[in-house]
Length: 386
Image (cartoon, rainbow, N blue to C red; front, side):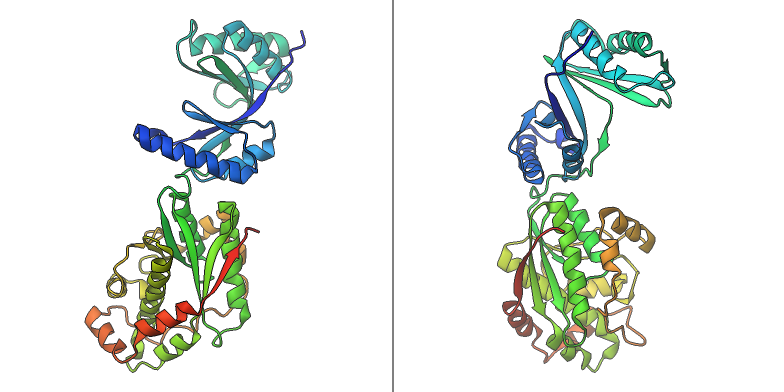
């Protein structure tokens, strides 16, 4: 018997959104739907109970949807009615197109709603029909092919592949933060991790020209473009002229504080941009103890300069873990392009700075005013994904 499949859809599953209160869940689902529409360039996205659906049979669309923050997994599925005989007929035909005689297979069935049959009934009866139709053997542990049947009230969905999603929360559900982007490996990863937790980012790159060449700027902007690819929209980016401020910091008599003073200046700039953009925090790529400015004492002295929350998603990661993440999200290859983005720390940088000592070193520099003027001169770009 020839079975005609009348409709194929993409099933989009989410994870922790389902644990939220009813009102929050509805809000997050709505944002997730809008983000999927943006990613796919399609309005044919709708909500069912516990699932989101896309009117598409394209695996490419399913992969794109799986990269949207908040998505746990996706599948291209055939839709059918929820009557047991209809499910068995169509699922058998579906399986026969994908299972060869020498393959092993398993049926994975689940059911939501009230029906006259159980998930076990589907799995047992469908398995028997597939054996009869294909001659293949059942292997529930490591099958060559898995046939999934998901019954949800009056409809059922048949599919054979689950594409793992990026997870997290829908972008934009947790407000905005300023991501401090240096052009190195760590900062784009930190920004991505907070995007995955629902934070929309404004990027800030402090351009040390004339102390470095144009490669430093180009590398940082390429990293932001990779992040924009995950957002599926342009990222607003401030490129501020940091060179003159950095030269002033290099003249400070207490030269061992160079790295700490530099970070405090960067935090001031982050706060200034946050105030302009009504952002609620700044994001940094700091990892505890990785470099001199990232010791516990120095981070304490640096934090004192602003009253905004500082989000450090990499604080407990080592370098190898950060590199693995950078490779996974696609920022690593641009972050290691040749560039001279740091003049290097002092020969013996301070690792136990106190807030009092740092404030004393900054006296007379009028850094708040210098930073304010620097941010006013910033070039504002809308960087699209590459």
